[in-house]
Image (cartoon, rainbow, N blue to C red):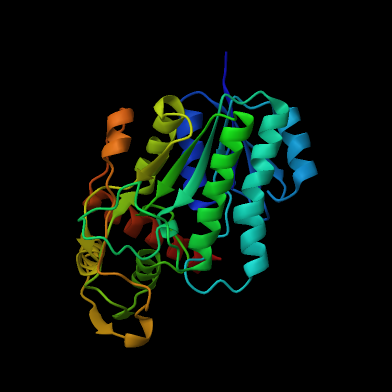
Length: 312
């Protein structure tokens, strides 16, 4: 019998890759979109805001999913121009999704996608960040995700909705667009830029291929322990200078690099790397994509996008 997955935010970066994996594995997929379509064959899209309690109840009752992947979110890690929308979507939206699932009683599990930004500034001296590290968010986005996690835990304890929380670190790969360092650099390089203005390249970050993120979500739904939080990252720290050098190498071009102190973030901490021992212990997940492949595929997709825009 075909299993049915509901993916909120299916048109997002991770949502599209997750839907592809689910379809390839034989799942039937319904996805919620707010405005932008995922434009994916095989995905049944429903346009709905995730903070629409009544609409979500009706949708889940109709679709009767076996599993729900709650990915829909306003992802704005720094500027947050619309706080009301951010909290409605990321925090209240999580409660609305869990309410709809608990009323339907059909889903065997919900995966709630959180973010490492919920950690905020980490002051302990450990090399890597463990799931038990206290949450102290310093951005509105991080606070919205920390609140969504608290709501998820309360819902699990009170209603018994079987869920796991995936606390994702930074990820990139083919199709990554927007105001994110690697995606923006790739866009500029694909457009022929000869100079890139950059922020602090000395900070160390944990980047995972988005396709490995999707694979981790699948594994957590199958094998994660109920009510648990799992870091989803590579567990490998790389400086942003290394990441930029790798991306430039993928484009096979020379480019001048200029440091712009205006791009430095006061919230940046020197090292931010995931401890993924818990994820590896409880699931069969092993990342498949080396960073060189990730950056090469990001470069290729950026070039394809530039070509497509040029032909419009």
